[in-house]
Image 1 (tube, helix red, strand yellow):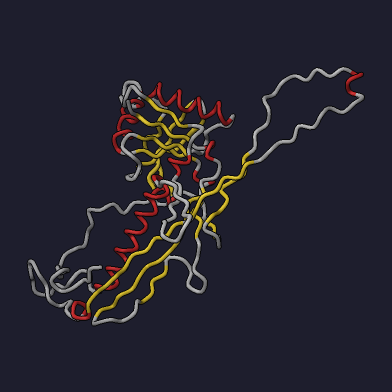
Image 2 (cartoon, rainbow, N blue to C red; image 1 turned 90 degrees about the vertical axis):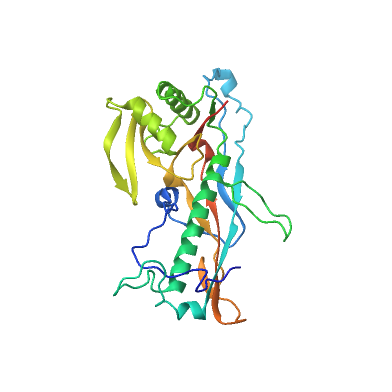
Length: 312
C-alpha cells in the first residue's frame, strides 16, 4: 500500500482532467440494483416446451386421458465478489496543500484543494470502472474454500444460445449482411422482436456500422441521451435497437442485450451498507481507510442476449 505524500503527489494549479476512462454505460443503462445476503444468488429459472405439433386424438382415444408430460425447470445462478481498495494520505501532505509545483502564478491554488477527498473519489471511480469491466467481461469462479476468490460471471461469458462467430473478419462492406444474419438468429431462437435491445460496441465496430449504413434511413444519426449515455438507433427487420459506444467491450465483440433485465446484486455488510469508507487502525501520521463492497451481476435469461465475435 502506497501513501499519498508531498513528493509522491505534488500539488499543481490548473483545471483537473483525467485521460483515463470514466464512462460506465453498461451500469448506467441496466435495471435498479437488487440485494442479497448470500454469495450465491438465483439469476433465473428456465424451462422449455416441446416443439409444437398437430395432435391426432380420436374420440375413442380421448375417453382415456393421455400420459402426463411434466415440464421441468432449471435454476441458473451467479455469485457476488469482493471489491476492496485502500486510501492513505499522510498528515504532512494534507497540511502542505499550499505548496505548488510546476508553474506558479500569484493567486492560484492547488487543484484539488483536499487531497484525501480527491483520493477517495478517484479510488471510487477506479472501483466503478472495475465493476463495469467485470459485468461485461467477468469470468465465473465459485469459491470452495476461504482462500479462493469468488468471481461473478459477466454477461459475455453468460451468453451461450446466441453466440455467433464471424470468421470472415470485420468489414464495412459486409457488416450489414452479418448483422442481418445475427439478428435473424436471435429472433429465431427467442421468437421475440429485438425492440429495445441495446448494442454495445467499441469504436472500430461502431465506425464500420456507421460507414455501412451511411446515407440510408436505417440509422437515426442525431441520436439522443439516456441515463447520461449517447445513443443512436438502428432499425432492422427484427426490431429497432439502440447503439452505444462502450470502452470496456472487447475490440472484436458486439454485445446485443436487454438492459432492463440486468441488475447489480449487492451484498451489504450489516450495519455498514455496501461500498462504504471506513478508517483503518492507526499506526502513524496518516489517514488510512478502505472502500469495501460486494456485488455480482444478475443478467436475467441469457438467451435474450446475444454476442457477435469477429475472428478467424
